[in-house]
Length: 185
Image (tube, rainbow, N blue to C red; front, side, top):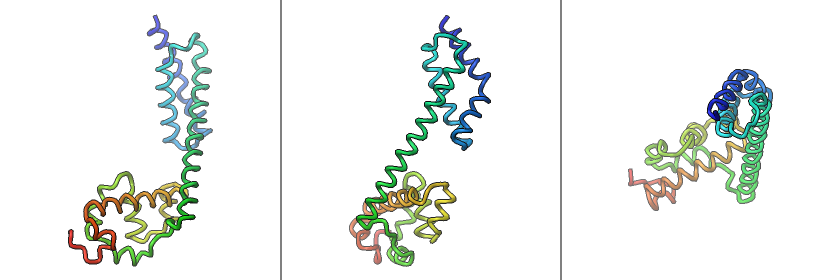
């Protein structure tokens, strides 16, 4: 009996999928986010369908789930922005935010750098390659990746830390002094 009722609820929700998509789209705008939020909400609805007492109220109940999901998305986005801003402020105070001049990076880069770049997590290798090695403007990279300049600064700092750790692990002490006479390649 409960399975039949759950199937009826799911069917009602699927019948209103386009209205749900439009509801989310008006609040977040980005198509990929709409799909993600809808999928997460549907998963949550299926998992908690047993808590719904009247099948007729399934649509209203699901709209409440969607409102909470959108609020959670914006709450998480705000938290990430606050973390990034705090990190940027901290690195500005400590002076870590300043990038080395491109010529200095090229002159001191270890030959192992290109071997280690693909092993970095996420898009760290891409950031280092585009900004530090190819000299691409951070503003253009941030715009291309659709992130704020502050967010890019944080990501680039983490990418450089990750590369530094990889170089120290692979090359040892010579990486601490610029690798001008690297013998580990």
